[in-house]
Length: 295
Image (cartoon, rainbow, N blue to C red):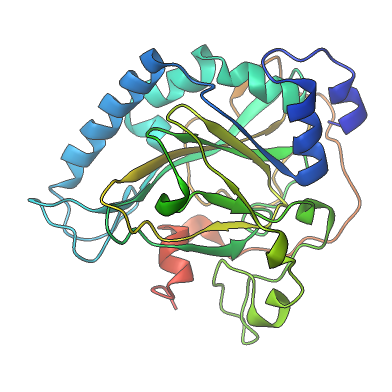
């Protein structure tokens, strides 16, 4: 959906300044948007996933494990498609005020694309290198965003989301090596083009939500504190934005309507889009690809 059409509608939960920041900078953080009741439900669901992971000894289609993960001391990097693993995660998208925020940034018709639960475990949770989401799942237009919910307080020492303001208005960078290997991060030849001196860190208390456009360059530093940093990530789009390629993280909810109704017309924007790998053979996580574990 076009920006001018979205902004012509009254906001439901975000301020006009927050909407302007999202469209101007490519990202915004909304402090304490989600209340304690939902946080309690989601934390309990996360604990259930951690308990299930104790039986796993290697990474698979659902659990991506750190190398020192054990049944006694579980250490997760990701739970893929948590909406499919526990109904609470899907209820959060359909029944909480997060849907109102989606409408404020995408328009009245919003659909689900994918979800993941990323962890930066205490004392060494992995970094995420500079990258964009668009190379992973190109769509017909740029009304695609990722929202991240901080389940616990997140400060500068825990590796909060870092974004480069305005980078969503620039190029989509190559995420392949020169010899054709997908790495999931921006290559050395392009890193010098990034305005890293202008980096902005989006942190906040528990319940804070980050929203970033899928073209925005972003990443995060390791978590070196003694406190874990679980982050619930959901990718949603305007209903008239359609994916060009296969889903990296299959879900029974893909393309399900969260707000409004299905689009009868697809909105196409001009541009060239890098084609990601064929994900039909499976995908673990951005951590595995950026750490070159799959090369």
